[in-house]
Length: 204
Image 1 (cartoon, rainbow, N blue to C red):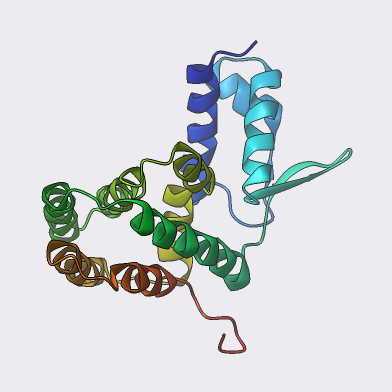
Image 2 (image 1 turned 90 degrees about the vertical axis):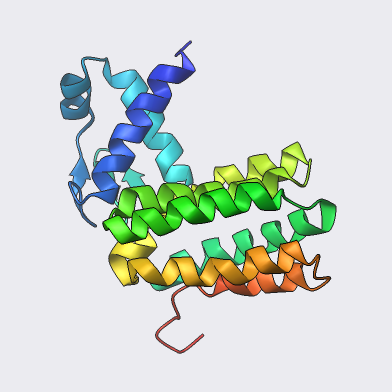
C-alpha cells in the first residue's frame, strides 16, 4: 500500500505544474516521465492522477493517457457554489476565533504587499479553513477539503482575475462581522465566496 506522504508529494508536484503553467489545457501528462523525474514507479503517479481526475482538473481516456482539462468559467463557478454553501453551513454550527482570522488577514496583507501569489493563496485558504474548522464538524471539513480549494483558488486568479490587493479589502468586512457577532454573517460569507466565482458568458 502506498504511504500517504509519497502519494501527497506526487499529487502536489503535479498540482504545482498545473498551477504554474508547466501543463496547460490540452497537454498530456506522461506518467513515465513524471515517475522518472520523481524516482518512483508509475503506479503511484497513476494513483495521484486519478485523484486529480476526481477534482476534474484532468481527464483520461483508454490508450490516450491523462490530459489537462480545458477549464471553463462554469467549472469554477460550480466549485464556488458548493464551497459557499459549505461555509455558510459551517457558520451556523460554530464561530471562528476572530484573533486567528485577524492573524491570517495580516499575513494576507503582507503577501499582497510583497506581490506573492503563492503566499496570498495559502493565507486566503487558511483564513477560510479556520471558519470551516470552527464548525466542529469533521465531515463538513473533509468535504470542504476535498474540493481542492487551494488549487482552484490559484487557477481562478491565474485564468480569470485578480488584483492581489483586492483580496485583503474583501476579507476585512467578514472579520468585523464576526467581531460583532452579526446574525447575518453566514449570508455575508456566502456572498463573499460567490463573489470569487467568474460569471458565465451568459452573465450568470
